[in-house]
Image 1: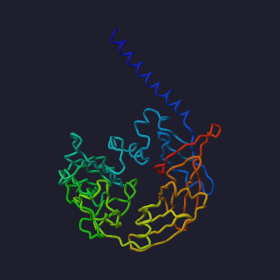
Image 2: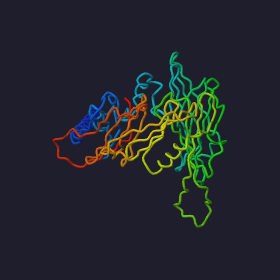
Image 3: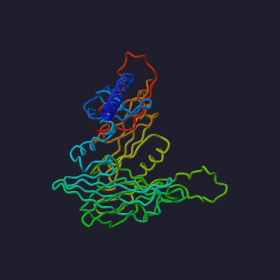
Length: 414
């Protein structure tokens, strides 16, 4: 009889815990303001499937035209799945449940019509240090449902503090994994970007390339290399584009050097990597684009890779200046000015985010408050015309108005 009471007690505790969870979620939902994207002018359909991943007073939420959803309003099961899980990842988890178990990072996945591939860095962690790095590879043949898996040690793995994956692609039976490797070094520049080539048939590492290793750069010292492609792409672009940032070359042993001093920025170069041919090529960007890049060190702006083009975007006093550079032919393809009304130029104060979707430029302020509700805008990349203007508003207009701050950190196509 005692064992039955123990079982009953355990069941009661579980029920009470779940009940407390939903009661707390219900109260939290009532106390949180209801935000929504509302249209001020233009074609509202361009924002129909867009959502803003946000944060309000330490609470994570997603804002769309239908309203807002807070993380603490989700069911327990949905929380386990992940609040901000990419919609493409959710679809893959639904279609390939067994293969996708434990896989949630879109930068580690590749998909095409025939296969689904995954790469993950494994390591040992001891006394605050990571070591013994390897890369696990797993591939699913969609038609046969067959899975293959193998593990390869990272070359020269003793030289690195950490290794993380930036991109995964499959080209003609070769899996190309782009990683950032942090060197065990006291130098300012302590990172390398590698592209590891794996033969999927032989299940072996066949090549290790270091981005920019054989390129002659600007005068000065290479500070870091960063991949500029959108991480949300599963099959993605033909080219990977890297920014190589240079700083002054200083003597680290100089006794007069302040311990907090960081070398002065000299300039940046862009390097393309053709995934089909493996060719690395430095881009000679036009002078006006280079000047725009220097200005963006102190003013809002962005450089976006989309459809084998580099889009240089600068926020000015009157709107936006756009320069589009074609990677394929090495020429400036277009220049556009997007005029934004003076009343809406608080975008410049809040460092807006930019995203390109279907030849449209989406512009969203990174912070929104009651006094300066920055608009959401969509512009036509070809004409520079504003297609849509919206804002994020609080639907709880009957409540006492208090200053709030919503931080926006991603714009997502659902």
